[in-house]
Length: 493
Image (cartoon, rainbow, N blue to C red; front, side, top):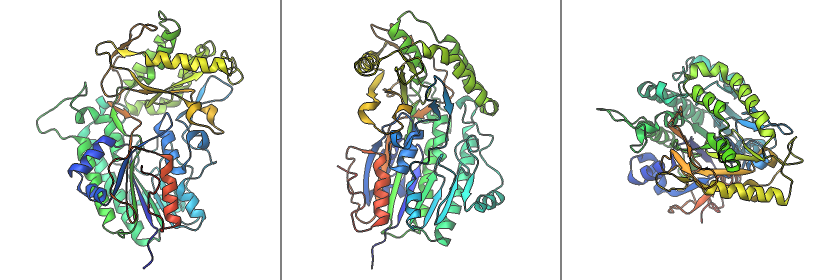
């Protein structure tokens, strides 16, 4: 009998990779543990500053400098302002679109922030009962009438009003019950589609742990500064993960044994210890240790974090314009400034002559020297109390990426040490800088992902280094095009 070239891709959106690794090894997640025994696992990393870029890298197999989506906040070239954007450019297609155009039958449920759904063969549903539903993009589908039928069948969103904006305002019991219901609906629908529609490639996105991890990481992690315990208190993240494991088990029950299975978690979440919102403060202090600029912006951010999300939502665009107006004048005068892109990595843009309107740093040797100087200054920051380094690495973007959208990306990407809470740092150049823990969320994204593959040709292996997120789409496309090569060849060391 001919070998199947079907592939099922399951995205457990933004689940902590270390937790998945541990719990698929010790049996806490029995269905995923059984899948692990049949296949191979690895950790994943991305060469971008944000999880928004990672999703598009995963879908397209291209780096951010090639697909052109770097974050929700994107610099407007030729200015010192940024704009809000969630829709990717159409220069690179997600893998299911590529395969669909070749005649492959496709089912795709809830890929995140993709272009309006379209496919020549199959079904695509986007933004249905997802993390912060409707905040950026309304639910949509291909065929277009399908989403209307779906909303008529399930007219309510159990999660709304969405309270992801602030851990202090969130009710873990209410949200856990709501997320269990959204997961039940998605699994029910997907099970029906897999039985009633032809398919060769299926993408299933489950984001239930994403929101739970942002809001309730402090309830899961005993070392978190805001951790609290109570009699009979349930860990909502652990509970949600076990629900996801059961949902995966139900889906796999009807899948052929030789179907290739891919389980991924991209840009996981851990304790919110990043310093991305203080990059501009650090840059000011590097160039002038007594500089106390940025107080007004800092106060605005603290105030914003205290506002319930139901109040934030209609004010989001106003807040963005106010922030950019406050920052624009300052950026014009400096050799480097922060881009307000993402918590996963700090982002520094050089005020480069010939690229910025009032460029100060000359291209070539001066640009390289500026990048080197700033990298060394960030590297020198250590925790005042323990001596631990604040920064895990500083990456010069042009050393690792190339492509037509390179100028949209920051010049330096700063990966934070988030292994511990650091409230004050010091260095000879900056003096002491403190971080007040006023963040609305207790969990935030990190550059760490989890990959598991199973199916014909995939053999059990231990964690073998790190896999680049961009390589996964290529492996999936190769599998669907031909079942002859071992699935996952080239992904593992």
